[in-house]
Amino acid sequence: MKGDNMTEVNDPSLWWKQAVVYQVYPRSFKDSRGEGLGQIAGVTEKIGYLKELGVDAIWLSPFYPSQLADGGYDVDDYRNVDPKLGTMDDFDALAKAAHADGIKIVVDIVPNHSSNLHEWFKAALAAKPGSPERDRYIFRDGKGPNGDEPPTNWQNHFGGPAWTRVPDGQWYLHMFTKEQPEEAGRLELEKRGRARRFHQNPAFLA
Image (cartoon, rainbow, N blue to C red; front, side, top):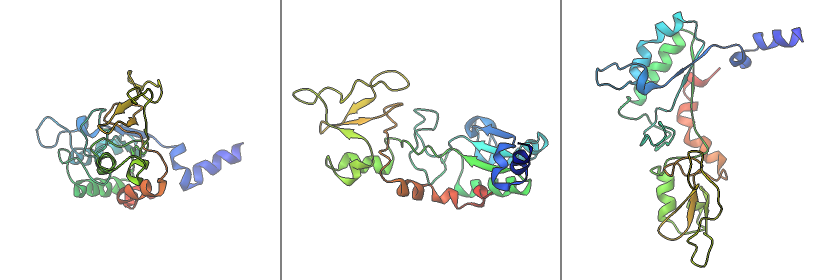
């Protein structure tokens, strides 16, 4: 057992098992512009402070473009930064500053759903039932003579039905808010590609 513990300490790929991870919600962490809202640049300003605390990694809560129906977990675009919080250049500067002080960065990708304003969901709504665009999400026909009843009696995690009907009569599943349609998981490689802009950043290389 002792040998296994030493392996965990010495194996760089297992750094997270011994790490001090500090969660940062960028919107409230540090306002660098005096606008009443935190920004990515504000996190960068505090890297020295986080180093003094002995932090090994920063866990960034979602900072993508979002309607904030669920605190940013309803993501409009996984390949960008919410303009209110900064730019991709700001994110790159944060990664560079963090790495200079030996701090890793972990981000919330939220792969199980997008927002209803994501380009994929907009395409799904514009497409016909049974189309590849709809297959990215969980669409089902309703019950009852006219399909006007939800496919199941499932409730979402916030309370209320887990299904919302669209104009052509089908229903889509959302286990959280209606602004967070569930993805079907059939296109896992595409989802990975969607987030690749961040994964290829040195911030995420152990």
